[in-house]
Image 1 (cartoon, rainbow, N blue to C red):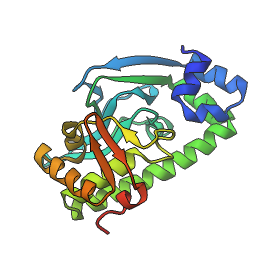
Image 2 (cartoon, one colour):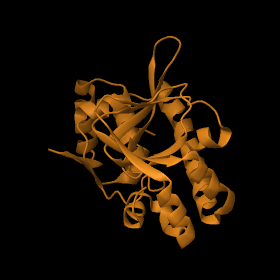
Image 3 (cartoon, rainbow, N blue to C red):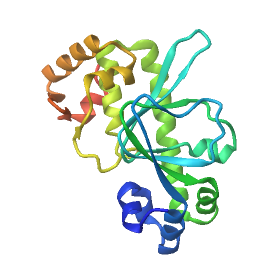
Image 4 (cartoon, one colour):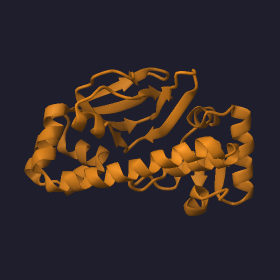
Amino acid sequence: MISREHLLKIAFWARDLAESEIEQARRGIVEKTFPAGAYICHRGDRLDSWTGVVDGLAKMRTVSKSGKDVTFAGLQAGGWFGEGTILKDEARRYDIVALRETRMALMSRATFLGLFEHSVAFNRFLVRQLNERLGQFIAVVEYDRTLEAPERVARNIAWLFNPVLFPGGGSHLEISQEELGLLTGISRQATNKSLQALETRGLLRVERNGITVLDLESLGHYGE
């Protein structure tokens, strides 16, 4: 289990729970660290936990029958995922891969379902989360088919600053160009050129240890 203070730090949704629900949640969570390149879960796994990113960076991806690597979303600290798998009691439909050393919070299925059955605040969070994630996946299908490299980079960065999925993240993200290339599915060279184009437009600032977003709204709609 984790402490109450730590739960409120890593899980923004917990701040709206009743005290008894906070106690229930913290008792049902353990943490585990995965090295860079490790699979946090494989497609087809039947995991018994709901998962949040405590620290690090990961991506949600799959490989098509033709062998194409398709990235659905990047996952940074503060993001929680896998609620659909738990609610439908089915195998994972995607891989989760750590892009750097990543620490995960794992909530037991029993704890998750207990909160789902009895907590109004938790259900409000889930509805909002599922709706936002649906919009994200629809956008991914669209830009995977129609957008060029700069637009793809812009969309992926913007999603990592989504205030619903990753609240309280500020305007700076520690991420390397190699990691961003892995998220977008393009080369490091193409990623670098794309970042330069976005920086020239005044949408972000490339820094030694990451990226600072200057205009999130325009970044999310870049190329439209």
